[in-house]
Length: 138
Image (cartoon, rainbow, N blue to C red; front, side, top):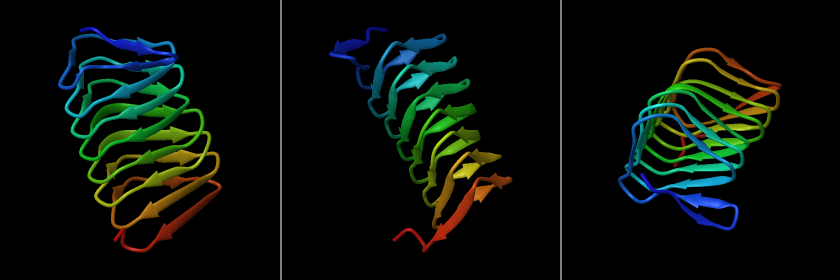
């Protein structure tokens, strides 16, 4: 599948399928309904569009994970990550802040900084410098 380059950002076409592992040497903008069957390694910021899936582990510097995304492996982020509504992910690890939005289903979550829980989520253990629960997400 072709990935388009714009400066140091790379953009996948909407509805793409990637059969194996994907490595991106910059920022990666993934449109909705994109499916990556292997692992995803991004050297910059990852914007993973709504209703996309990743079959393996994900590594990146920073991330915004769109709503209803499925990540079957570990999400490993060097800095901050925002995980939007109704995402399913096996495990999340981050060096910075983690924000978990309503409906997130996640196994273990660990951060070197603060974990923000916005609304109701399902999770295993939350391990961070601080864990803050904020309202109901509305």
